Image 1 (cartoon, protein in one colour):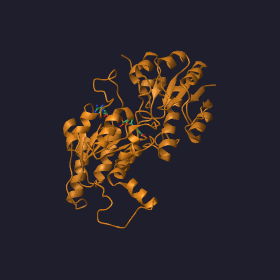
Image 2: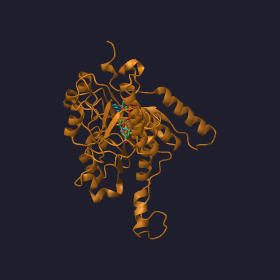
Image 3: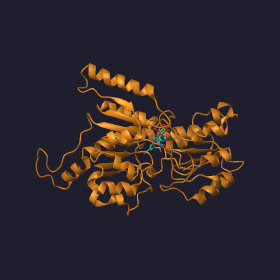
Image 4: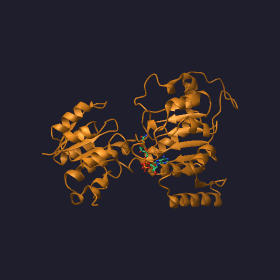
Length: 368
Ligand code: NAD
């Protein structure tokens, strides 16, 4: 009987699907991640498949003990910066992710974060809850900033960046796009055509626009900056994204601009951001991801002095019911993870990982 170890629960429907396939599934009940030593022990015991989350460091140490038995690592996330791709390739072990199914959920959450930050929804609710709402007033105790008619910079126009563009265009925003590696000009032209139609038919009062620009123009010109890049270290690429948003980049932004990050925590230099928020270099930031998760109690981002302009979330952008748990591989991360395991263990697609849709490191299996 084929054996699977999951470092986290992925919900009853997907877990049952794997069991119904006749696999023996052992699940670490959590809710925290298991220690790496336990993962090593399980892999060493000869499991066929390992289901991981972004909390598990997966590298040569694990692939080495899985030599000859471990056939797939299936990650329940689109980001895979916790998996050492070079090591997986060296040991020729396919690993999979859950791209696409979380795209819309992550983008809509990013947009809601932006709205919550700019329109000061948290501060507003606090007033009501704390009994500190004095009276309706034209501008006291504070005002928020609209998104309608404003300009957003989308940094990274991959799946989630493009979905964010779609959401922002529906809110009558102008859009500056930046991506050094992938530019989808057809998509951008389609969005412009929709914007033009909305304006021409009177659905939208002001004409809005979208264009690709260089990084500096995007950072300087935006009222909102939204980050949609993967975490890439300098050993992996000549365009690393580690601390991509640093003191220098923050200084390019308008003092009235807001930053939204739903990508990965280490993409933002948190110390530099906290200082920029304190010194009012930028107007605010909404963060779903952090350099260290959960966010340590002594993080400068928790400074009460910047609480009014800093919104913080628990890596929750993909956290919709269907997105996380649907057993349908075209809808849910759990369903896609289970299907990815099945594809490898059943030898679907002629048993060729290079042809399997959810395998990330196809290059390790492609014929040269
Ligand atoms: P994707 O690979 O489709 O898109 C990423 C884009 O970033 C690519 O087009 C790439 O060319 C671009 N890019 C790379 N380096 C860049 C740079 N230096 N500057 C600008 N652009 C750069 O990935 P995706 O599916 O859109 O996901 C993006 C990231 O979002 C994931 O890698 C993951 O880390 C994160 N994510 C977070 C959550 C959450 O819950 N907060 C959910 C899903 C994804």
